[in-house]
Structures are given as structure tokens and as C-alpha cells.
Length: 45
Image 1 (cartoon, rainbow, N blue to C red):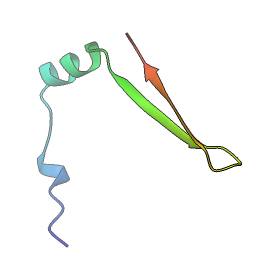
Image 2 (cartoon, rainbow, N blue to C red; image 1 turned 30 degrees about the horizontal axis):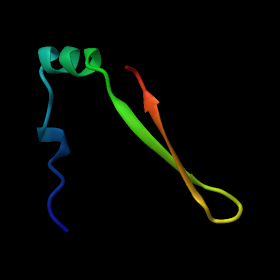
Image 3 (cartoon, rainbow, N blue to C red; image 1 turned 90 degrees about the vertical axis):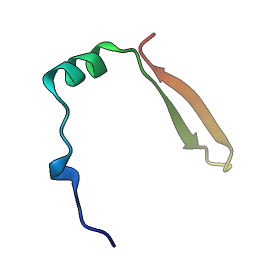
């Protein structure tokens, strides 16, 4: 496995503000008791 470089990657204050102000949609997926998959969008418009 490679070297963890997470600590070297940081967003600027402007990048953080821009990221938080943009609308985002995630897809939430679950499995029912029968094994059937269901997915729904979840997020801000």
C-alpha cells in the first residue's frame, strides 16, 4: 500500500466556502428484506 498523503492535501478558506455553498446530491441505496435494491437522491437543490 502507498504512503498516506492526506495530511498534505488541504483546501484553502476560499475553496472550503465554495464547496459548502454549492448544492450537492448524494444517492442513498439500501437493500430490502427480499434483497431488492432501492435508491433515492438526497441533498440540497
